[in-house]
Image 1 (cartoon, one colour):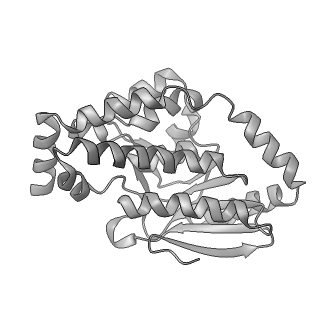
Image 2 (cartoon, one colour):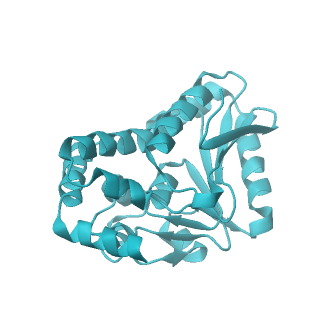
Length: 249
């Protein structure tokens, strides 16, 4: 199956490389991105030849997060905002539900939804130049999916630090926070991620799948409330003003 927002290749036996393929927009996430992310994870799960996957971004970014122009287009339409936010939550959750392990190879910036997608990966490797941030507070929002998942991965203190400030952290800091497991030189990142995926792919697939399922037990609590809170924030005057200022810049 072909995609507009993703490219799929096979760098080695049992391994799929999934590349976010919107480099001209810093791999920003629009509705099509989220729809295709769900489809990609479903395809990986159906393919008996795929036992592990690597997720990375084309160009100089993993993902700059949500497409701000899309936010503007949905302003004031609560029903549409709720449908979109549910799609976002479903897409990130689909990475966690994917039967095969998904290794994040984070190259460059991972802002907003880029950090949330990082949280959804099973293991995360980052290049030295990677940068992470929940930028949602800067436009009057909160990282709805990330504010629920963050404490499971980074703990409450680091989640609050990022979600309440919009502050950017580098790869070394992200490793200390538990968001990243290994930091590599930028030019060696993809090879390291594929090597790790190959290591996983060589193990009995059912054992790996069951291990992933049990490690992710109980991780769905709180999403319904976070979804509604996120929709509410989309409707505030502060959000509209911040988005307008961002687009003007």
